Image 1 (cartoon, rainbow, N blue to C red):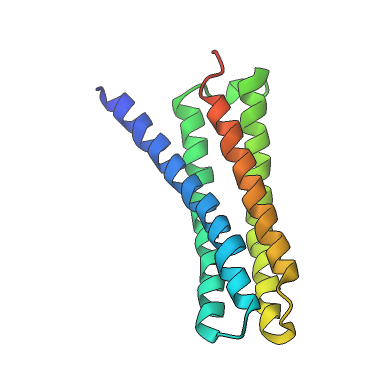
Image 2 (cartoon, rainbow, N blue to C red):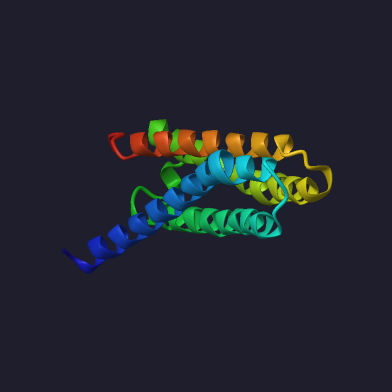
Length: 149
């Protein structure tokens, strides 16, 4: 394996690991942490839940960074607005930005309000939305690998 091929593999690996953490984090939030918060007040659980959202931001940022690097190592930015592959990449980039906004811009504040209102429904909906969007992005990205050049 050449150095260039190894670097491309490492970049793809970073992109996939970041995406897996992102999707898995939303899964854990939506189906484990937030429903557990609904059962009763727990300061450690509230901190863990908020920390999980912060980790999602880091995982998402890493996913986007490695994704942009992957574009440079594969088809290039000049192909972004051409054909199915470009459409998939642009759609996933838009989804990724939406996920970052959902996490830090909406979900974290909703989780902070849980400690005073005890209403987890807004946070639950946002976590489910984040999970659904991340599943869509992963599905699209699996197709991007097989689009002919």
